Image (cartoon, rainbow, N blue to C red; front, top):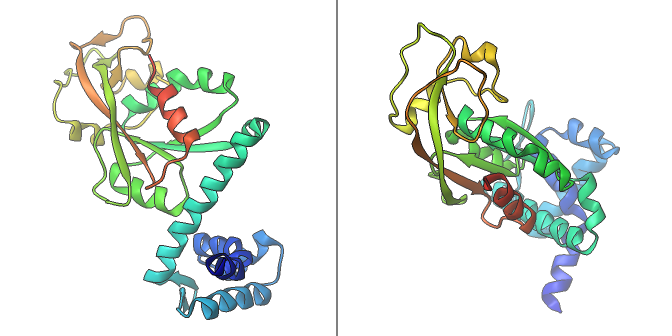
Length: 253
């Protein structure tokens, strides 16, 4: 009971803290919460006083998280996502309004995501996704900017859970008759290619891209022999049930 009372004392201030932590700008955070910057500043001060530690360094152009503030921010995001997942389980209709933000590296994974998009939409999951190198995925996941990552290599950040989901058959393809078809080489070669999906004939006329064999190609496409690419799922330390089910759907062939 004593532990619950201690948590309840700071609980009302945590949502506001999260907004400030994500924007790192008091006025911007206050505008999104529809309160005054002064009131939000007092809320942050009360939380810091209750915890007995400084959560932000106040700088000229904003507020920068301290090490303690960054740790609390990660925990609050995970806690709120676990609560949201529990509420979605109790009320499945909430899923219709839920957006899940996915980040991927390399156009091969981007094409795979597009290939499975219709199945996700029929399941009422609303998906937005963008490309980013693996090196930036951990920061985006931990900050809450994205919910789920797919990559051709694991992250080096031990706060990110990296799980190999399996291998996807891929091959190089292009419509440009003057391009030399790249060999199936190290995954690092993907970083030099633009992340483009769905596959456009315009892009294929000017580039050779590594693509899943399950993705339909335009007529006349030159193709190299198939090889396998391992797909990794990247999530926060505690991925929610929804994220796990979405990744399973995305990888199903």
